[in-house]
View 1 (cartoon, one colour):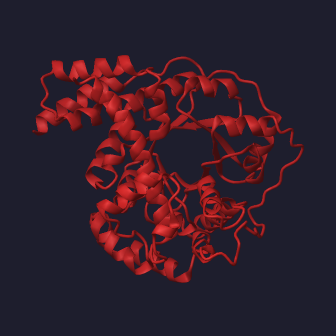
View 2 (cartoon, one colour; view 1 turned 60 degrees about the horizontal axis):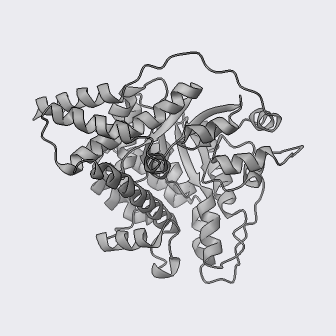
View 3 (cartoon, helix red, strand yellow; view 1 turned 135 degrees about the vertical axis):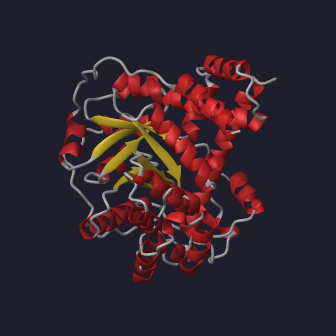
Length: 410
């Protein structure tokens, strides 16, 4: 079996690999983006579609991010159909014994590599590639696919690992091996503080637009500056962690940006990853000046009288209790051999990693990427719920991508 696995890895690597050729393209500069850069902010584009990136690309952009949803958009366009056919044919020609689900997982790996490599070839910048959600609760499979992505393009690929107990622990190992990591699906200061202390990923995230949306959807206020408050508080926590813990070098990504106005407000943050629509809004805004709000006191648009109001403050707070929990965890001698279930159980003491059942996860997926808070008691931490909603939303889009692959197996 080990021989078969090695042969499969070799075949899939050969199918996925492309030599990166040519020089970095020369692009026009954008004065607004130059101002962001001067304030210390790196700017990325959030798309898997080459043509959309090309429409807005400027000299100041330094990377791109993809995810399961964005990859699905590319695949449903038919752009990857020939690659799907060729990959399936090659695997079958080698007479490798794969189940249908294993075949879909491997073809998906090649597709993700090809989508990312199209972007790398065009812009010669780093591209974040996301793992299949099916591996998110397995340390072994996260390590396996993380290493394989990195091997395909070590100069330009950054591996996106979703926030799960297994993800936290796998990231620790991958970073020790030198694999660049974008630790994704974060929604709170505490989630990201744990990530940087435990594994020191290159990047952590706050999906700020979804936090504003969950407030609006529940009529708990205007939703204005809710995600921004969490993001800025996280930036301050990371800045402190970098100053006080020499092993920490992680930087923060503001993700799920919805508007050009948010881009301007978050000037000075480590990294902004921006979808093309919001980027166009920002570029056309004509803002003459921007300042950093990292150290400002932010009043979010939450109605304090609303029954759900008190659930939101946990997103931007970092208690001494939680910091002490992280200190004790990082000091454990068995940390590098710990399994996800163990971390899950340990973190129950700080109300992290709620034990969602299969039925719970299906309910979350059915509702969509913004959870219905009325369906969940206050004992379920909001950041846990938001992370699971995001992961299940990506799973739904990944399922659609997988179905297109499946149609070629008949």
